[in-house]
Length: 396
Image (cartoon, rainbow, N blue to C red; front, side):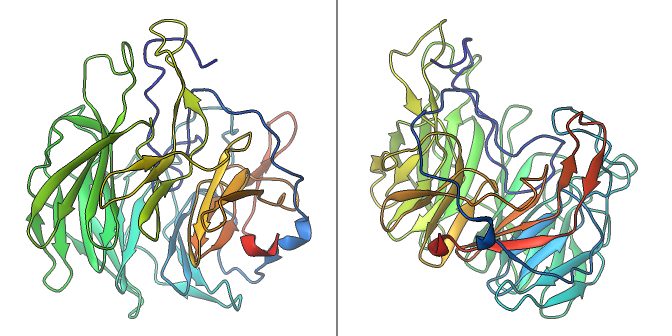
């Protein structure tokens, strides 16, 4: 049932960023389950937040601070249709704004020190940390730090090549920068002390060379998920997800049981579980079939590594999951899993239909969607938007 070929089990990791090319954030070349998931919700459930001080754009970086959504950079170029693969906009944007999704109040941010498109970012403590992707006229240049309480930017040197594929994760108020893959070259992972702006290398993990490395902070431990780096991954057997946990205090790793799933992220912390809500799976294709379908997503208990399947998966793609006042959202369309009840619900259709390359942010349990482009039927003309809308899953 899945796409044929030896690498059917290898899927790109979901990135914690927007606009890292001109493609959708999630590519999953496998089989999607085909059951129904209930009716499309009422468009009135989307609440518009008027008054954006930003111009129309797509692929802005969106970050949740706990009280506001930061929207930074992006592209005001709508010349590349969503089905095409075009060069990155050579002149991305540097301006930004913050909006409180509860009150709809906007404020402008100080411009970033450089234009940002395809940047990776997280919020840790009172700062937003951003790794620029660079653009045609300027290579990546280290780490940018936005001090939320001061509305000010600064630049911090990084102990690794800024052109290398590093990702960021918040570990409490500390920042971890980790190498997403060892495919080009091996490297170390690092943790930043926010008080001194100094980096310390993390101890080498016990899993060895890997690709699609993803880290997640459980609240107590730093979890690493990856796939073993082999000459032809997925050709003879599935590239199952390996798991290890790091105690940052004792600086010691513990390997956990492999998870019988194909995805390494994204992850939502929900009580004593981590949840990857990605739907679908793969079986290796017609050549080198694995004899069964392995899911992309699932749930892991960090304390023991125990894995379990997602509850009653619906058809189509996943838009994410929420639990209490936290969520992870992958897209503005699809089904959302309520971790508390184990039930799925459809995201209501956005007024005007879903745009291409919007910014989708989990603002607590709310989903905020900003900007994006709407294309005509011939996909020859795109119209950019600066509209922000909010949906609360408990209202559907």
